Image (cartoon, rainbow, N blue to C red; front, side):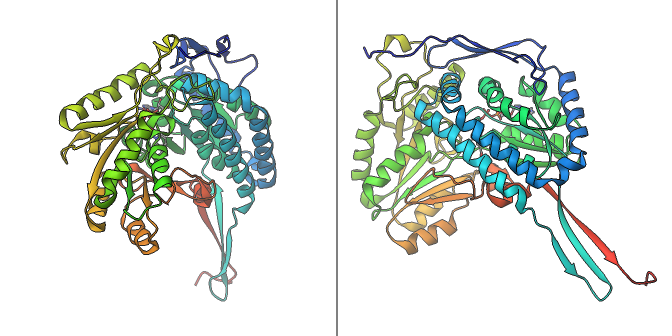
Length: 490
Ligand code: NAD
């Protein structure tokens, strides 16, 4: 039995006194630790009326000419917020691990990554240049980027801080006011991360509503005073959001699910590619939208690659994510655990389990939502495992004979979020990289994200782009002011 070093924990109670940005008052929501089943936080939910009030306050704040026009102040505010996220690194990372189940190392990277993202948009606030143009002897135009107005930001639970600021920071940098609706499973860490920002911003510019998607999320999406919804979550929920907000022609940006291919060619740098295949699929215990969950290996390298990958998978260390020695934590909830296990059972019936890791031996973790990282091969081409997003540590494996067949297998998906290519042949990387339909294609790496580089989905993986400069442009409307100096109209 491994020694456990988990300290005692008193459940966090939210909202804290004086937090106007997050109105409670509704029924209690208890968030639990997926490692132990114990309560992590007790939150008051927001009522539908509370959502309406947040939107009203945001509407008023969004009209404030100072907030709309003073990009330098917005940028400075975001810089200060980035610093406060760094100052809170340890408490936020611990709360994130306890509430979500990711390893403490990953939680720290997430907090620091969120700070980095905020800092990028702090600078980008001052880059929303317009354009002036001569449009003839007597006419000229000034093209401006203006804030959209009120933005509803709806987030999932897997990377609750990075995915939050990836939408919130550019929306604020562009001069909008925002109402955030986080996933209930990670509501406490979201509220704690937002609290210092709310103190830095003018009243009403930031609101947060806690509650279920079907009630509170729906109230936000259905509110006609919300000019734009920036949604990150499942593709099916995204379609509902699109119908509801897009149906009355409000702006929608959608960052949705994926089933990303990871292609390993026979000339790949093999040590790095084995590490890459594990990292691509098992990061965040497989609960990451860009998971490289379909491994495609060129036939010439298949046996050796699979042998090495299987041995590494069997040696993955599952356990308490607060311990630095743990490689893989639990999944986010017992419900998620059951869903993933049913896919693994189906995989065993339809194909073959090629390898899996041992569950934690620690009795103290018996109630934890652990799922063994699993490699599944020999699946029929119409298997659900090859086509549906599992959102867990399940890696399917297929062989391909030559490049065109590899591309065809990679493209056999309704999603298009990301892809990986492992080869030392630059021409091959270029050809395959151009041929696959994906918003991000990693070559000889996987899961490296940069705030300055856009991400987003082809096909059912989404609409619009986040990060980079396109990511701030999404939160603006373009306006042309046309000046004419002719004495008469014609
Ligand atoms: P989800 O769609 O169940 O929930 C996402 C958010 O939407 C939550 O806050 C939820 O409460 C809310 N919601 C649910 N129903 C709603 C409704 N009818 N109206 C308004 N809001 C509603 O997704 P999840 O389970 O939290 O997250 C996992 C999914 O997110 C996966 O499919 C994953 O691929 C996707 N994801 C995508 C990206 C990306 O960048 N493309 C990033 C992370 C996660």
